[in-house]
Length: 119
Length: 108
Image 1 (cartoon, rainbow over the protein chains, first blue to last red):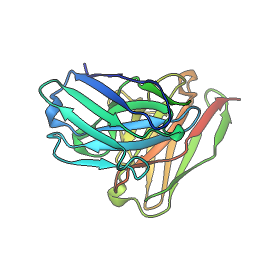
Image 2: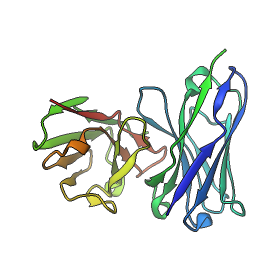
Image 3: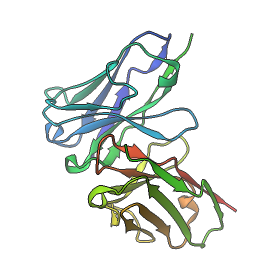
Image 4: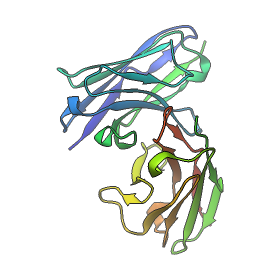
């Protein structure tokens, strides 16, 4: 059974940093591209970043480019999202999501971790 | 960036009725790379449809998708009580990946 478990969310001040993790199990982790998708309170879904199975390629939404870094440790089946210079508009639930066959759509999602950026 | 516009914003229907949800793209979606998700309150999204018309594993056949180019549709043939939720379309034909704003299907 595929499981994705996010952690690391919390309250942080504007300009601060936070690192999210996503522990994966139930599939051959290194084979699949993965993404982070966020959802601001009461709003829709926004793709944030993607990473290839090997970790060699990463992609970012313009809204986070230069501030967020997506990485993975295939030996630990874990994803990381380093978020720096956080802004109020980064407040959201952050979901990690598995891409089906590195296609760009998501067949499994974690339950999400809430990031709140506020003073 | 491909902007997806979903309509209507809210659909008020009764169980047993047919639901038709639309997703319009600002430019043609490459290779019909469009997916649909269902999200219930407090839950993560769930994949329903990929490649415009293919149902994901375990999705009942009352859900169907169609369309091409810039116009796509999700149809729920007969609404069950568990189908009342928010539905999102997503294109994956080009980066950045983008989602529509969602359609809420509520009980009338």
